[in-house]
Length: 217
Image (cartoon, rainbow, N blue to C red; front, side, top):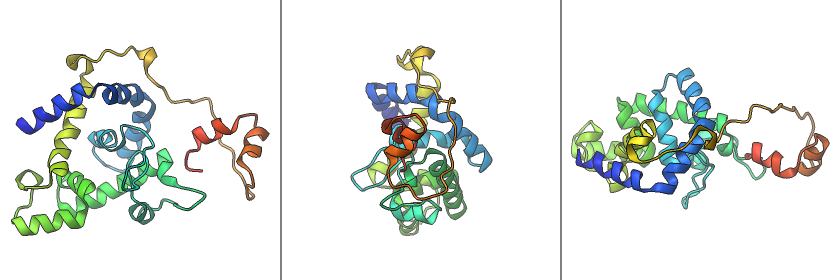
């Protein structure tokens, strides 16, 4: 109870980040929910993306990137392209699909979704070493580093607050929330691109708009 209450207090008083997550959820949650369902991953893992990046294409001090904060090695292991020209950790749909597959792998290796979430945070190898050293099998019985020890409770607190925002003092009208832009079309490029601005202008948009909707380029 104390561990969960701490995270409820921290996240309910961490006002700016929580407001942004609530405003961004309608833009990203439908896509995340669809992919998690297709991959048979529990829907609650959409809140892991909030815990990792606050639903933004963030870059951490350790160079983890994107909604799901993939390090380069893990991203490559799960089929994301990472190069000087393309970084699909910033591709919302592809990175979400990769995260779902990674979480399923962690579940298979650790035996529970709670353990899978802990392994997502601290790494599978580190979790297994800790389990072996302490002769425990459950996240809830392990003495872990502070970040991972708080991680699942933070996700639970985020779910509670985002599911019941008014209860925690957050009042955001629907017209103040950010929605997915459905007025788009997909263009297939069959030849090398020498200049993204030229491509953007060819289709009547700006370089800024092209980059905004294709952040992996």
